Image (cartoon, rainbow, N blue to C red; front, top):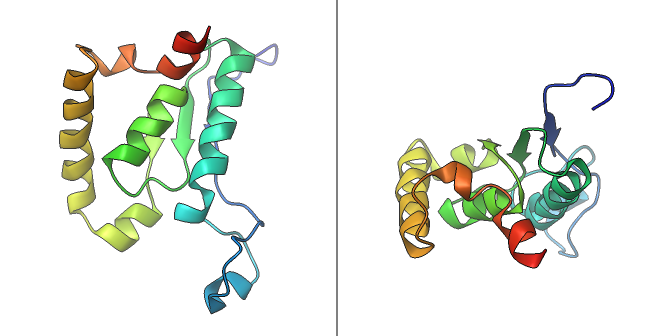
Length: 125
């Protein structure tokens, strides 16, 4: 923050592999998508707490549906990037996520998505 950055992209890929015997996990290079979901969400929560929610966080990693998107938002992401989700779910992913987020907002009695950003952090404080 002292360097004047405008935000943080958290995260992208990991070299870690899930404990599965699928041949795709034996390949070299960065692993993204669902295997990265929890690690990404944990990093978003860490960055949100460290910055006290003062910087926008782009949540990336394992967003395959509305539940995954909501998880990133309440951990502290104010923006989302989905890539693997579009590869596996197709262009309908966007509509599915938007409708799912509306349902989550109603369940939590939230009028604006910005109210949900970092909700987990504020509830545990």
